[in-house]
Structures are given as structure tokens and as C-alpha cells.
Length: 185
Image (tube, rainbow, N blue to C red; front, side):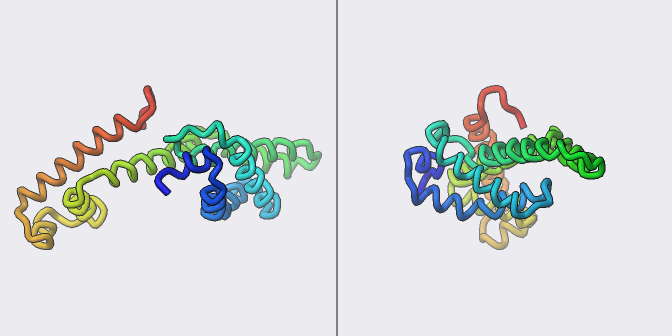
């Protein structure tokens, strides 16, 4: 499945079911961290995913589906918390006010944006030439030195430097292509 967002948008039930199974527990956990009500969190997560299916025509083919779903989950959770503010118990209201403030905090938007950025980086990785990708992973993810990479791969240190340089250039180019106009991370 090349693009799950596009598949769901086109009405592919299997793609939606797969996304549902992958994300349901993550959404429940995300929502429960603010509501402290596991059962209501499960209901909200299901509402969010059902809304995704109902509004699938609005999905942009190259959009980050996870980011979109978490934005919906955040808004639904905020609404649910604000409804509970009607309780007369001040301690409940104070706790709910704190949770609403946490969800409305700009860092929450950064969290959701980071989901999108992670997806963009993954896309850029997928289009790297194999040799450069392997070298870059060994350098930046495994934390090996250029000398260790050269020894492991049986290539010169200049080749290692070249592949890393190519990878970084590739990332810059791809991220510029992928980022929406005016969006900065």
C-alpha cells in the first residue's frame, strides 16, 4: 500500500481497517492522558476514527494522516473536557481546566507537527540511494564515526563523507519539496 491516506480517501475499506488497528490504541492512550477516563477515551478514539472514514473525501492525498487524526482527537478531547466544566465540584473543574490548558498549549501543536515532520523524513529516507542511506543511518542513527563506517563497509573515509554529504543535500531538497508553502519546522 503506497499511500494509506490516498487509499482511505478513495474508499479502500481494508486500508482504513489497517489504519484503525494501528492507531486505535495510540489514540486511546493519547486521549486518556488528558481525560483519565479510559472508557470515554475509547469512545472518543472510535468517534475520531469513524469521523475520519465519514470525512475521507477531505483527505489530501499527500497529507500526514496521523497528524490530521491527532488534531481531530485533540479537538474532540478539548470539547469533552469543556463539557465536564459544567460540574459544580471545584476540584473537578480545576483539574479539567489544567487539562484543557495542556491541550491548548502551543507545544501540543508542535507535537502534532512533529508527527508530520517524522513522516516527511521517512519519505525522504525512502528516496535515498541505498548506499547513501546505509552510510547515513550508520552515522546519524547508529552513531558510528566515519572511520568505523569506512572499516565496516570496506570503503574509504572520503566515500563515507561523500555519502553523508549527498544524504544531507537530498534531505534539504526533499524537505523543501514536501513542506507546505510557508511552513517551517
